[in-house]
Image 1: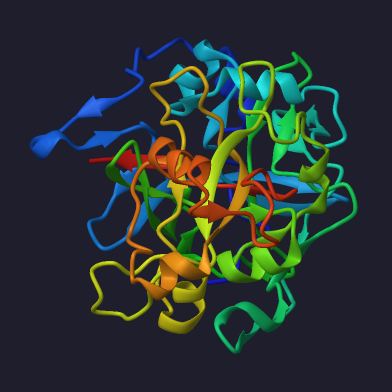
Image 2: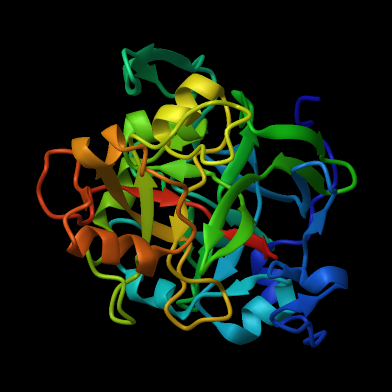
Length: 338
């Protein structure tokens, strides 16, 4: 359904900031060791998650957004979000929108144009694609990261406005303040996880992830640094893993293009770790020709292991140089871990 500009105001970020704490834990272990990190989320068991939907404004028009992470622990706990202290390092940078709060409603300087139609044409090996056009484009200055008047940085991606809605939205219920969104599979520390993708700072990456193109995120400090002094964290995405829908070793951007499935990226940290950030510094990784010829480009599940393979010369950057950050960001908060 299209958002209705006349619905009631939903509880805003600013109002949540002054509500009494409801003492939500940072994570909950459910049956089978399932860890849910976004406490305001409900996973549906069909590769979708339902999140609270918030109403804001931009240029005098209604926008709808979700909240996933916050730099402040108390705010994150009250709002059922992930605490990511590293987001504080992004404050006052060009990668963050400075918002105002009017009558309890957040007003954003920039929003998203959801009208473009995503175009993806596979290349000869799947990746890189022959053509790629993202299905949503941020206005100049748009970023999912916002800085509240009190200085807290919140990851608050826009998912709908008068131009349409994000392609990964399954259902949106503006009356009851809920949105159901598609999840993506990946790995962290050897374990499977699910995350939600909202933006990428590179147009090809935005097309592959089917998310909003937001080049402002390139201004995040600091390239190729996932220490606690940075606002970024390391993600490894393979460009030439094995393909085939039924292949248990399938992985990589080439598989994502050819098989239409998740690339099964590797994320360095999870939200229980202090170096976690939802702003992933993408390291594109290429198996050497010798490894591919020997059929040893096997599925990987841990960043540290992949970095070890890179130190042995089995993995490189796409141009054959040492594996390192490729110069663009994806906004992918982790929802859960098994």
